[in-house]
Length: 167
Image (cartoon, rainbow, N blue to C red; front, side):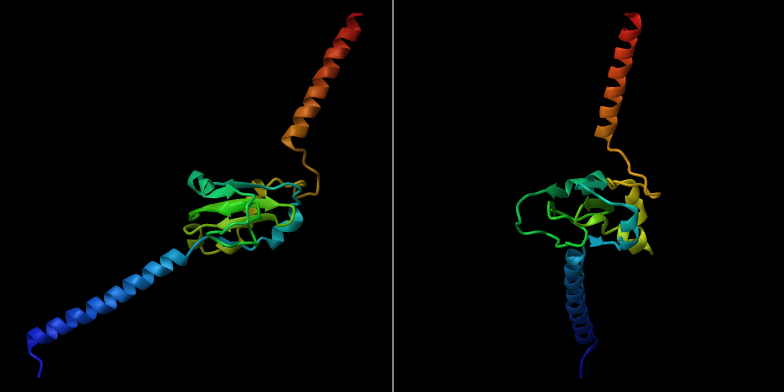
């Protein structure tokens, strides 16, 4: 029959064995958890895209997404929301928006952002970040470069009209 000390030792050994197994299992699960694509189908008709780009709310997250022309090994394979031009090099904590003509406007949900109850359905926040060619009403938006070109042309016309009046 087992004595009290032997029973305590067996219990400790058993708890250590189960505890270590549980800890290593949790550690593996933490490593496999990563960013995921949100469901952005409902915003695709609100935002057409003709160029690629990205926006991250968190500066640290932005540093984890690199522009890459190589098709090398990727840390996270998310072809549904990450354009081929970009490579995720580390964990994403909050959220990022990525866009391309092929994928449209997409949201990448980070580890902490996924703790929200409806994180899969929050792509509307990317409508403000993606470089959409049209706004929600279907009116074509002008790019900042086009606006600058129009302002420069207007300025030249004003200068020419002022010199024309003097002569």
